[in-house]
Length: 136
Image (cartoon, rainbow, N blue to C red; front, side):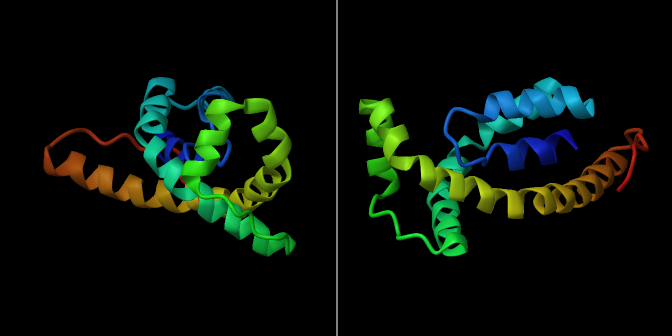
């Protein structure tokens, strides 16, 4: 469960927010904090890769005019003038967050099922004990 939450929360489309989100999820759901944070940090390139697709999905959902910025331009804007970036991108980010909300919870569920099966098989193939945790 920690791995699934770390992967999905790690792709949340607001740069700089995922560490806090993962910590909150670990505290709320009793997850392994070091594991969720490690996965969150490892998945960071995926967050960058998925930022624009979440923005595009949000634009389609809300029939908003397409943002004429690339990922490189967005990152440059954030690095050079954060207040300007926030004032320019806030509505785009809201749309991207809502798009993430449509895909995030089902992705956590599916990843949990997949990772549980894979990790149980790996553990049993090495003769390791397999803990039976709560299932969906």
